[in-house]
Amino acid sequence: MTATVLVINSGSSSIKYQLVDPEGGEALASGLVERIGEERGRLRHTSAAGVVEHMDPIPDHGAGLRMILDLFATVGPRLDEAGVVAVGHRVVQGGAYFGGPAVADDRVIEVIERLSPLAPLHNPANLRGILVARELLPGVPHIAVFDTAFFRSLPERAATYALDREVARKYRVRRYGAHGTSHQYVARMAAQLLGRPMAELRQVVLHLGNGASASAVDRGRAVDTSMGMTPLEGLVMGTRTGDIDPAVMFHLHRIGGMSVDEIDDLVNRRSGLKGLAGVNDLREIHTLVAAGDRDARLALDVYVHRLRKYIGAYAAILGGLDVLTFTAGVGENDDIVRAEALAGLEFLGIELDPARNAGRKKEATVISTDSSRVAVLVVPTNEELEIARQAVSLL
Image 1: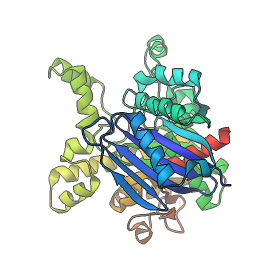
Image 2: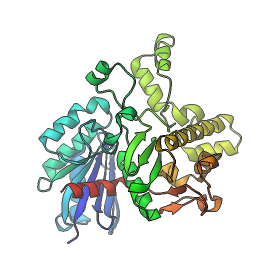
Image 3: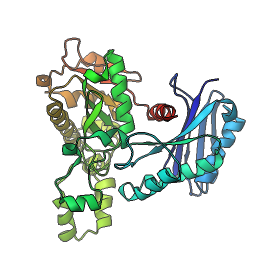
Image 4: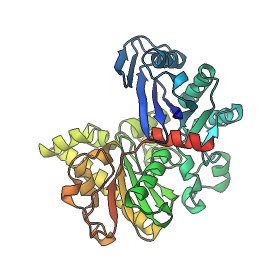
């Protein structure tokens, strides 16, 4: 019987899930529960039997997970026949505690809860999913896989802020990063695509979605990443500022009269591409640019400028570059962003092939020329598969 892993990503008002064959890499079923706690919830379950949708009230995560288990039982594939060896849970913040997956026992759950102030939108929701799933699926181990784990290997010089050391220690202020599960998966898949061991490659990975991050991976080990203590720092994102002078916050408070919560909302939800162009979807921004919208053009320029800045900085940190990989929604689908981000970087040994770069990429693809000293790739990310494989590796 094939060994499978049920992967659960529990959000504040949603549950994403997949039943994954970690060896073959296939998703045997997947789905999404959303609008939990609202007047009308939604559940979409996809399997070999087709797509099933329900539009019913889903009062809490327990009810949502019970509906998921009912669909597995009635529509399939049946979990009691699928060889489920573990339930893998995505957890955003593992702090300095977890450098890999961990069995979600009472001790680990207590640490995840203690780290919630570092990821207040994510860890509490991740934790709810673990607690409910442990209750409803008590017969299999539950494994927590942390977004931050891949970046626990950052050297101190990269992880440390130049803040008073006692204050930093007391409040656990340091660079934790995010999207680590994706960066780890993509770096490994890039090496496989090239037929070269990770142990000889200097890689930059660009995870570009509504949230965006860059990483420098030196021979399989993460040595820097753009996101910091929280996912706000770094690249320009859909609604987040990315890098910004911290004194802007003091200015907005003292001169603008804005509260801490108002500033938090501004920099996390009303800035980035949305703040510059009025929309946060790059497809809409390209349409506006084509129509001559100057704000949209500036937004794209700022976005691309920040990408180039990080590529150059990470090439310097790595002492050169062998592989540069685009992934996630924008990275996989937006050939304009890929081309503009790499324009002018020929001095690094990057030569983009326009024909290979054209269009969306559903499979791992080389988009550089044959003569390019740096291999430029598009590798679709698969965080669910990485979570499943890490869960099995722990077992």
